Length: 309
Image (cartoon, rainbow, N blue to C red; front, top):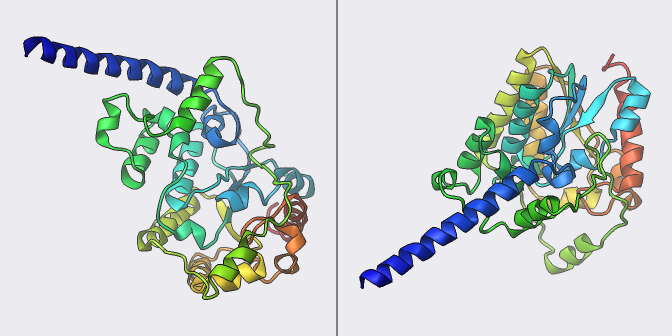
């Protein structure tokens, strides 16, 4: 029995040592990755210092071109958008950016119904940075991180993609970024998923809002304004049929309208813009393709000529 227990203990110890080595390798190498999934690494280098930040989820990341914004407005902008994130993550990214870079003069904050929904994605992008309090607090409160993950090296056990990325970097297979100042256009055509969805579900859908995120977003707005940064709300184009399909979309729009009036914030809503009626500009109901993003970026920049000076 004693020998059996020793064998069990030895096996557990071996597993812990093995995962400790894997975790250390993955951690150190994921911090070197620069492409989209781990864009957080770029913010923590402390060398951006743009005077205009573009904030939001994928509808910022792929919809607003810093090249076009810069060329028309004569500014230095950077896109901090990240796919699949809601407001808790967006606020954390803003706070991390401020910790390592200068505060911007302006924030172009893309807003939508999706960012007010519960749930957290992209946890893998933050796991190498658990030593950063902003990150650890975010994952403990909104993610699936457990306190034990700080002390045991198993945080990557159920995240094989992160292990693959880290090991590829470790072995010298560097993954090149396709982004320009955080912007990643999508050279795609309409994928047809929405057309198939409408056939299966003719009743429409709803966004499952998290009531706490309404207050969190307002607190973020107040924080930005207290730093003498001007914030502009931008509801980027959504394909019109997709707007109509979400039955409670108006609740998000009303929230942003009320907030903009309360704090005297410019709110540019492109929901009814001609772009939103042209399927050629989209690859799904929520996201512009490259053609649409460039058209929208030009329109947005021109609408901001008398605002951002």
